[in-house]
Structure formats: structure tokens, C-alpha cells
Length: 135
Image (cartoon, helix red, strand yellow):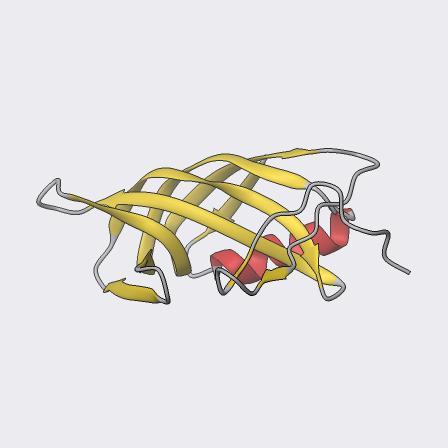
């Protein structure tokens, strides 16, 4: 369980945590709190179409996977946020800065390594549950 504080970069903080804890296979089970800023992407079949949120929104959903790619943690996160008008915005999370706090539960799979190789036919890095062993 993690608690991130106001102003922390979500991806940087999770990547640092995964490196420090030696997480090679994991899942972000849930996250709740607030984002001060966030960018969500919608995959249109060839690229992500970004939508930036620039005012604080409450995080109503955050989940994803932690794998390894090119020797470093690789995060794939999706989420949804609610703004002051109670409208929900969500999708593939591209960037996020914590507002106030973020509480995140991470589940790990000790002894396992998930990969995230590029799948050229889709133009995306996709989760590989049984990648070749890293040197």
C-alpha cells in the first residue's frame, strides 16, 4: 500500500517504488485520491488522442499493470476522474500529478517477471506474462 502526496508525479513515484522494491510483475489493484493535473489518452487504432485535465479532479478509479521493458519498470495505467461538475473523464493514463494525496494498493507476483514488448501489428507495447528471461 502506498500513499503519494500533493505534487508527486504518479509515474515517476510508482517507477521508483517498483525499482526499489524489485517489482518485476505486479498490478495496481486500485487507487483513490485526487489528481491536480492528468492527461488521459483514447487509443483510436493508430495513436493515443490525449485529453488534459488542468483543474483538480477526484480519482474514482485507478488500476493497471507493472512489467519490465528495456530493464526498467513499465507501467500501464487506466483510470477515471470526476470533476466539480461530477462528470467522469477517463481512459489510458498518460501523465498525472497528485493533488492532496493518492492511496494505491499494489499486488506483486514474486518470482515472476512480466514483459512489455512492442507488438508491431498494433503499434503498442503489450503485456507478456511469460517473456524470455532477462540476462
